Amino acid sequence: AQKVTQAQTEISVVEKEDVTLDCVYETRDTTYYLFWYKQPPSGELVFLIRRNSFDEQNEISGRYSWNFQKSTSSFNFTITASQVVDSAVYFCALSDTYTGTASKLTFGTGTRLQVTL
Amino acid sequence: EADIYQTPRYLVIGTGKKITLECSQTMGHDKMYWYQQDPGMELHLIHYSYGVNSTEKGDLSSESTVSRIRTEHFPLTLESARPSHTSQYLCASSDQRGNYGYTFGSGTRLTVV
Image (cartoon, rainbow over all chains, first blue to last red):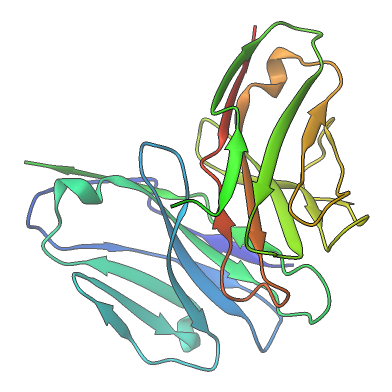
């Protein structure tokens, strides 16, 4: 069975601080995909990144960066110089890769990030 | 610009009423999903579909039903709404491999009084 754990339920930071959101996953698959989604107060889930289990390179996109470590089954997300607009709930998710069937995403319980002035 | 549409955005309805939550996507995706989201944020898969005429129950038992008569349309129906059905319902779709992430709709926030 697949499982995603986001141990941090809620994080509060002051604007311009860096913040890291933790994600630990469990799977028996050798090939899988990891995702991060952002859910702003408006409610929709916004796709941020997808990472293939074979690609352990870290990725940076503007103020966002992701650290994938297969050895510790972690896929952490860092926001540098946080802004108020980053306030949202962030979900980490894991997908199976069975061809020809519905690839279901298993979500973590989410981390609520509050960025204040 | 959204490629997956959910209506209504908000719905307040009385106990015992029948309701249908609409979900449509314009991306030609074969796979579609319904998630129920607790007030505590956790997302639970309640239904999914591989394609037309294919529907499966998800990980969380739900009293709702779904249908998939057309590729673009995946409505969810509650025959008799109860206060325990109060939740946010999120519809999503993905391509055949499903590995490029899901595209989510804006959700329907349902309140049953």
